[in-house]
Structure formats: C-alpha cells, structure tokens
Image (cartoon, rainbow, N blue to C red; front, side):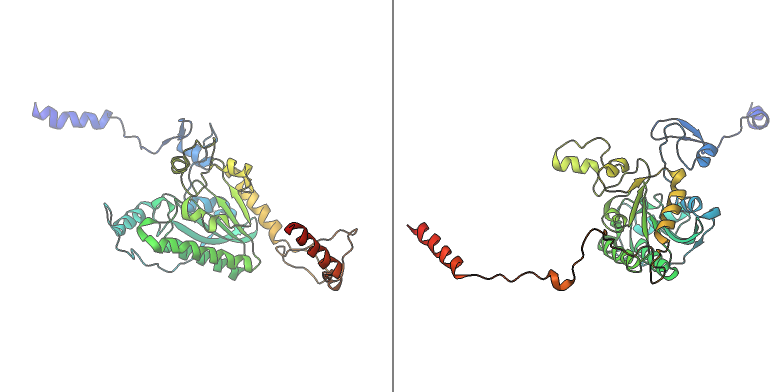
Length: 335
C-alpha cells in the first residue's frame, strides 16, 4: 500500500494533475466587486472598466504614463537619517522600513525624475502609497526640496502627485518639520516664476494636505480621490453631525472651489501637457517676450488713469463751525 501511495499516486498526479494558477491574474474592483483580468486592468491604467473606479498606481507606473514615450531620468537624492528616534511599537521602525523597501523595491515613498511631457521638460515627484501609506518623513522632505531645486535649475515646471496618509508618526517631530521645509521648497519654484502643479491622487490627507499639496498654482484631482486633513469619521465624532454625501471626495472639493479640475486618468497626460504649455508660453510685449507667469494688469481704455500725485487724499480741515456744533451737541446731551 505504501508503494502505491508513495510512488504510483504522485506519478499519476504529476501527469494529470491541475497546474497551479497564479493568484494575480484576476483583480476584484473594490468599488463594484467585478473581477477584472490583469491585462485588461493594466491596459486601462488601473481603472475599472465597469464602474470607472480609479485604483491606486505606483510611482513608476505614473511616470511611465505621463512622460513622453514613458522615458524619464531619476534624480539622485542624498540619504536621509534613518530612524532618528529609534522608534519601536509592535515592531522596530527600522525593520518596517526594510520590509517596505523589500516589498516595493523603493528607498522611500517618493520618486523624483525629469523628462519631457508633451515636448516640454518637466520635473516630477510621485508618491507611492504602497510604501508605508506614502507617509512623509525626512526622506520625503528631502525629495520635495530636491525636486523643487531641480525644477529651478532646469527652468522647468514642477509637478507633484501626492498619494499619502500624512506625516510619518515613527519620525515624530522630524516628520512634522517637513511641512515647513516643503512649503519653503515649493515657494522657491514660485519665486523663480515657474509653474507648480499638484495632481491630487487617492488619498491625499494629513500633513501632506496641510503643506505643499494645497499650495499649487493649479490643482488637478483624479475622480473619487479622498482629499482632506482629518478623516471623515473623526470629523463626524468631533462635531457630532452627519457629513454630506461625497464629503472630502474630489468632486465635492471641485464644487466648493478647492480644486481646479477633476480629470480622468486617461486624459491626465494631455491635460497636464496643455496646462504646462499655456503657463510656459512667452507673452509678447513692447520690450520683448516675457515669462507667461508674469502678472499683467490690463486697464480698459474707458478708464482714466490718474497720476500718483492726483491720488493723494485731500487734507481734513476742522473749522470753528464744526467745533462749535460739536460743543453745542455736548451741552444738549448734558441737559
């Protein structure tokens, strides 16, 4: 019996047994629950063909989608201090970093690169939510500063695609300091007269929203993206009221003026190229071309512009009659 069990049966199973099917051939849409073949999902840029739900994309996939011919050059970044607080919860922070690096093949939650978008040189920084929720620590702060200075050096627009849960708690105050550092960094791009465009991806929350993510010249959002500071459940528990439907979604923010446009992923590259082309186009003037970002004040021909000396306010003269009238009013009140 052992001969049949140990020898004959394995031979027969190897000949007629069913081959193992990989687990990643089919994906279930988290919104509608439909099963989607992986090749169809990749072809549709990780967007459900049944309900148009936009799933999350990795940083490299986003850059291949947006840069011309999918070609770009990564920008080298200096190493940040690892685990400055020697933080430990259920697991050492250093071990969590190593696990995330092994899982994603990335050094941290962001990638910075430059290339051409619609023929225009562009510097781009893209987050990857799969790396510790795209959280912002010292390395991400360094990356935003590097991207901003690279844009200034190349005279190119800066495009940032955040997908983050906010500041990284394992780095404590060091992660919160990145809010100020990244704000100053993107301000350098603005001072250089270069466009700064933010593409808000799902989700963009916490300290990332409270800093550089909401400081762009143009804000574009993907459909259905969660954009906010605190979570909806926390807000409801704090104010003890039911939030409106679609609260903190990109469409809700568009209706209330927080973002400029909501663009589907298949149209994102074309839209970005058009916006960058408009913002970088020189404006004709009598003294020659000037940057498109320079503010111009256009005065209608029907308005008479007075010289500065005619705009000075007339002196106020207090006469005796006014003083006498004030005195009489005071006497009446006393009576």
